Length: 260
Image 1: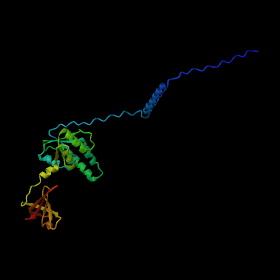
Image 2: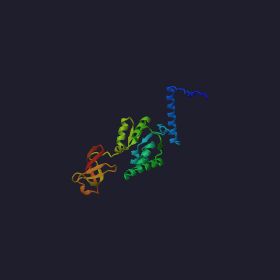
Image 3: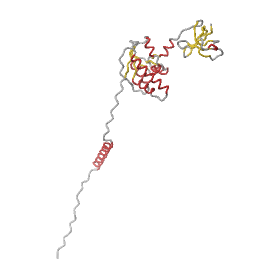
């Protein structure tokens, strides 16, 4: 009868115990690598965004530079003023002003669209003009960090110590309050109004009836209104009148007269 052998218990391999801190660090690295791999596979062809080029505030080169506001180009009177020879310097039209003109020219509103296109036409006319060699027109890409066009103009006008040419009353007020010199074409127009005193004679065409009874209204060549007594029935006719009163209003002078 054979002798039964005693079963020897199987030995289990000993697994070394890792420190808890090592386990946590390893888990963090695995999660970080998986996240990076996920971004790479989700957008494998996406390039890193290129930073926008910094805005330049370099002062334009030119003799007696003047910043031109959008309103001046839309207004259009700058063209005959330049052609008259009473103006000299470098008209600086900034690229963001052209951008605003283009935006207006692309408007769905027909009136705004017409104004924008007229402004762009004025820019091209000023660049091509040869009637006044003392005036040059320069298109500049200089810009500033402000959002609004008016704010940009005031900022650059103050930075460069050069004036702003405008017909915008609010922009003119803000610029002056900021210490920027303003050249307002409306101020020039007021300065060119005829200076008449009571007793002077003039010839005026009555264009329409006035507000008061028997009054007629006419306009001088510079646009000044003349209210003439007893001319309501003479609309369409020229009359010789004598100035009786001069009224100064915020919009300019107003003349009252009577038929000679």
